[in-house]
Image 1 (spheres, rainbow, N blue to C red):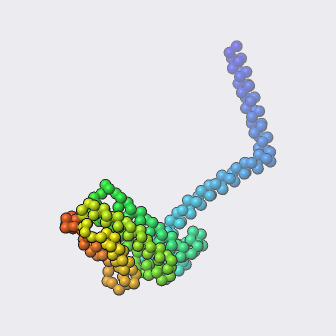
Image 2: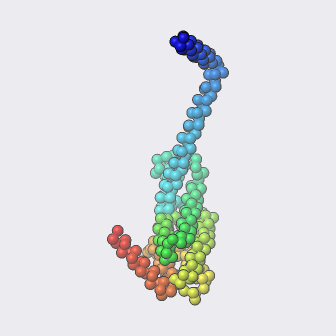
Length: 266
């Protein structure tokens, strides 16, 4: 009895499979079914290509960005054509123009990106209470000095001569953002007893801003036998040490001495 039931069940299952397979085969012969499957395949291929192109575009743009920073910040951009720049990267001008309509647009992008990153990093140094105040000053000075070293005088000259609107943005950034960050740091130093209380902070900051505008200037630097970072370090040292109390100055010099010894050991 049980064997008969099992046999009948198997027959029923086999019959159902036959019906399903027959239905699928009929569908495959249908023009609508074939068109639907082709549409699905086309959509999948299109989606995959779009995803690959998107990733490739991001990588290409980052490559162009990095190459532009290394080339223009060091050598300037007025004497480098887009054809020469594209050739140095092993790609066509058409590829670069896909992301940046002109050389001026590319220069604006890398300059504004640099300004944003400098401001963000300086803000991090200024507000990081986990670091001792003098270490924050030292970190800020070293960071700005290193960033200025990456941008040679020729780059500043090219912006000043050929892109006055962009130069105005750079100049405004130095006079407003950097000066504002500097003013807040000075006030913190006064409250902590590192900086003298008898010095007018507003006047001091204005003098600092004027000095930075004069020293970190393409024309001025072209007549000095020093680099941008050396000029900045010298100016900041004069301003900071002149503003410090005797105790603050001793602490600051001690930290500089320790830092120098650590560099020698490394």
